[in-house]
Length: 601
Image (cartoon, rainbow, N blue to C red):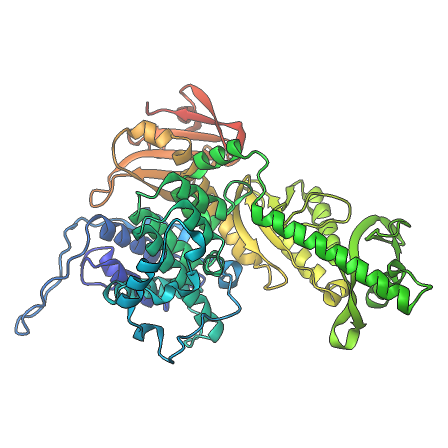
C-alpha cells in the first residue's frame, strides 16, 4: 500500500465518504496534543487523499473471488509522497467545539402523524412543493419544512455524505466527545441538514435573488450559519455549483459579514470561495457606509423597547416612591449588588447614563427592568456596567503591550458614551507575541475571579488577530481562554499560513508559475543567516508533486521572497534572497505595502 492510503488504513483509493470515515477512526487514537507529528502525518494524508478523490472520482472495484488471496493494492499513483512536505491545513480543524458552533434552542417539529423524517413520501412532497411554489415570491418558501422535501434516493445519498462530514466535525474535538448525542446536539445536526437541503433545492430550482435573501434571513439559515458542519457543506456546495449568479454569491458574502472586520481563521476557505478580497472591495465601494437592514430594525426595536421601559419604569417609580426618581432607585440597586457608590451622569430626567462615584470617567448604561426580587434573580434594572469594566481592562492591556485594539461595531456599537462592544479584536505581531497570549490568558482568569464579574458575568468575545486575520476566538463567559492552544496556533501555524496566503493573494505565485497547476504547501520556518523566515513550497499536483518554487516570508510579515527551486540549498543566504529588485504591492490588510522580491521572473 502507498501513502496516503496506508496512513488512513485504506487498501487503496477510495471515495470521499470512505476517506472521511477512515480519518475519523484514526483520529480516535491519534491525538494532536499527545502525538503532534503523528497527527500532522494523518491530517496531511487525509488532505491529499481528499484531493485525489476530487480529481478522479472513485469507482468501486468488483469484489475479489473468495478463493483468491488478496494482495496489496497498488493505487494509480504509485510514487510515494513525503508526508512531511504535505500541508497541515488548519482551516478545517476546530479550535474548540463550543468556540464556533451556534446551537439552536429548539429541534425541528416532528411530522404530525408520528412518523420520522426518513419515513415521509419525499417524492410526493417535493412535487407538491414545486407545484405550489413560485420562486419569485419569497413569502411562499417555508424553509422550516425543507427537511421533509426531496427525492428519497437523492436524500439518502445526501444524508450519508452529511453524516461523514458530521463525524469529521465530532472527532475534531480530539476524541473527547461522548458516544451518545444529546438532544441539543441532535437539534443542531438537524438544523445543518435542513439548511444544506435548502441550498440544494434553491440551486436546482433556479431560485431568484429575493428567494435566496428570504432564505438568508430565515431561521433555517441562522440556526446553522456558524456551525462548522454547515460551513464545510457550504464550501462543497459552492464548488459543486459554479453557475450560481454573482448576486447570490454577494448575498451569501454579506450574510457572513465578510464585507468588513476580521475573517475568522476557520472561515477563510469560505471567504475565498465567495470571492474574497475582490468581492469585499466591490461591496465596500457599492455601500461605503452599509448597515444591514436587520441591524437597523434591531437597533430601532431596542430603542423603542428602552423608551417604553423607561416610560413604564418612570411611572412605577412615581406611583410607588414619589420621593425617589428612577435614577436614584437604580443607583441604590447597583450599590446593593456591587457594594460601590453610583451616581447619575447628569440630572436630566430621561438620562440613562451612570458613573461610579469614585471614578466619574467610567460611564455606563442602565435602565429599569421589571420588579426587583434578588432571590429570584430579578434585579429591577438592566445595565452594561460589567461589560464597560471589561472594555476598560482590554484598553489598559493593549496599551501596556502596544497591541492594536478594535472594538466590534457589528452590534450597533458606535463609541458613544456608556456604550460597550460585543467583541474585542486584539491585533498582534506575526512573531514574538506568545508572551502577550500568556498575559491575556492570565488577565482573563483574574477578571473572572472579581466580585463584579461573579455578580453579573459580562458577555463578550475575544479575537486574537494578525492585521485583519483572526487566528483564535474565545467567549470567556462560556468557556475558558485556552492559553496553550492559542500559543500553539500562534507559534506553529500562523506564520506559514500567512506566507501561503500572501504568495497566493499577492498574485506572485500565479505570475511565477503561469498556467501551471500547483498547490501551496506550508513547510514551517527556517533560519537564514540567523533570521527566521516562514517557508512555503509550490508543488505540482499529485501524483507528481515535484517542487516548482519556494516562498519565504520575513518574521515581521512585511517582505515576501519568491525563489526558484535551483537556488535552494543549505548555503542560501539573505544576500541571495535580496539580490533582485523589490516591488511594493498593496493588499487589504497591507495598505502600507507588502515588499515582494521575485527571483523567478
